[in-house]
Length: 210
Image 1 (cartoon, helix red, strand yellow):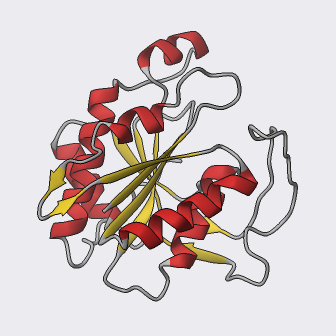
Image 2: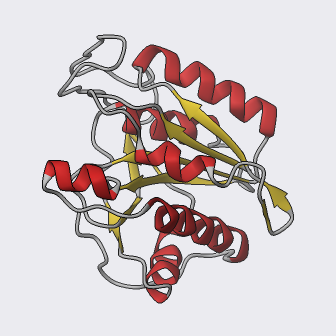
C-alpha cells in the first residue's frame, strides 16, 4: 500500500504529514506492506513522483497526506476538485491561479476510502477527527485529484486524502491546534485498517466541520 506525505513548505522546517507517514514505512498492516513516499510541495514535480510511486507499488490502499494548519484533528477529505488556485507560491516559486489540475478531466472525484467508518474508528480510539468537504485548491488538492483520476478504473483500490494539523511546537508558534506525531501516525494506521476491513462505508449523518 502507498502512503505519501509532503516536504516542508512556506518556511517551515518540517511537514507534519511526512513526519507521520514515514513512521509507517515498511510496516505490515494486515497482509500489506506500507511504502511511504515524500512528495515535493511543487505543482510541477509532485504529480510525476506520485504517478511513478503508483506504478511501482500498484497499491491496494493509497492515501495521500498533507498539512492543514489551523484545523483541529484529522481531516478525512471527501472531494477532490479539478482546480488549482494557489494563495501562496509553492517551493519552486510557482503560483498558478484558476487552472485545472488535469485539462479536460472530470470536475471532481470522491474519495473511495470509507471516510465515515474511519471517522467512527478514530473517534472510538480517542483521536479527534472530522469529515471535510474541501481539500483546498493548493498542492494537496492537486495530488488528491490526480490520485483519484489515476485510480478511477481500479475499483479494488481504496484511495483518498487525509489532512493532519500542526505538530505541537508548530501549533504553539502559530497559535493554532496541533497533534503529536505519534497520534497522527496512529490515526493513519487506523484509517488504513478500516479501509482494508470495510467493504462498504457506514451511513451516518453529519460529521463535516471543515
